[in-house]
Length: 217
Ligand SMILES: *[C@@H]1O[C@H](CO)[C@@H](O)[C@H](O)[C@H]1NC(C)=O
Ligand SMILES: *[C@@H]1O[C@H](CO)[C@@H](O)[C@H](O)[C@H]1NC(C)=O
Ligand SMILES: *[C@@H]1O[C@H](CO)[C@@H](O)[C@H](O)[C@H]1NC(C)=O
Ligand SMILES: *[C@@H]1O[C@H](CO)[C@@H](O)[C@H](O)[C@H]1NC(C)=O
Ligand SMILES: *[C@@H]1O[C@H](CO)[C@@H](O)[C@H](O)[C@H]1NC(C)=O
Ligand SMILES: *[C@@H]1O[C@H](CO)[C@@H](O)[C@H](O)[C@H]1NC(C)=O
Image (cartoon, rainbow, N blue to C red; front, side, top):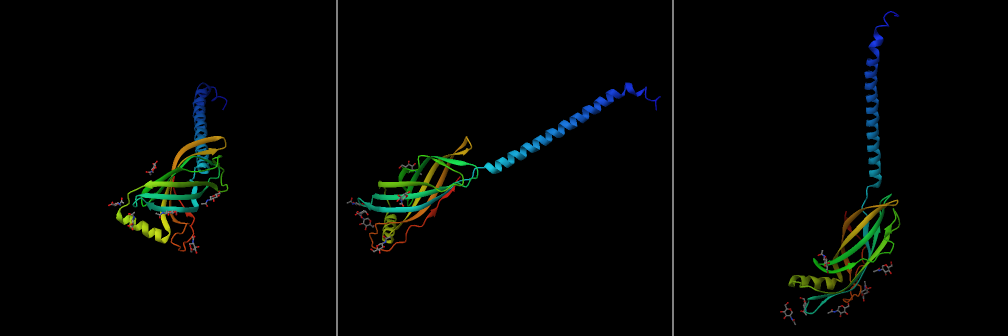
């Protein structure tokens, strides 16, 4: 044992250092892979928690007090007030509704455009109570209905109920803590059946049914 020793020492240090180099690389490699896996997992979890989910949008109330044609069936006179609610389903993200514009359509004709009325504080808390907005469409619009469409209008008028579609254009942003991000354009479409409340025909008309809008996120 003692006699064999004197020879190897000249070789052993270099062997040991290469071995150590290898094991150092191994340890570094394992640490690196572990860090990468941990970081990806953390990012995945944060992503799942944070991923913006679209808000939900409803028309709760509609009041149509005027909807008829004058000037040889070329001019639509309208007075429509809508109340909307938005719900934010996100657990961590608040929503800013920066711009909200609405267009109204009858038989495919875009007859009115308006900015939505919304609270001055445009931030919707997470999972909070409903956020309310309203839209007022009042005025006249010249539109050339063809003969069939005029007949359809007369039919609607007799029934006291009109199919009016609302398209809403949002610019929103998300907020996480103090971090604001994700300037996003969102569209919603609400296909409404709105009863005329001034009830000219003297006919009993069903009240307005609250309607869910399709939000295209
Ligand atoms: C919409 O809501 C406001 C209050 O938030 C209310 O004063 C108004 O009457 C509502 N409009 C309709 C058409 O229900
Ligand atoms: C249109 O509607 C308004 C309010 O409902 C009414 O005063 C007016 O007489 C109507 N006009 C026509 C041509 O039906
Ligand atoms: C009403 O419109 C029809 C065709 O749309 C036209 O022939 C007629 O002259 C118009 N009447 C008036 C009073 O303008
Ligand atoms: C408008 O159309 C209806 C249905 O076609 C018709 O009865 C009515 O006379 C028209 N009014 C005018 C002013 O042309
Ligand atoms: C509808 O008309 C308004 C102007 O009255 C316009 O600003 C808006 O872009 C139109 N919307 C569509 C979908 O054509
Ligand atoms: C429409 O008029 C009838 C009779 O005048 C009345 O009984 C009914 O409540 C009215 N409906 C609406 C929605 O105003």
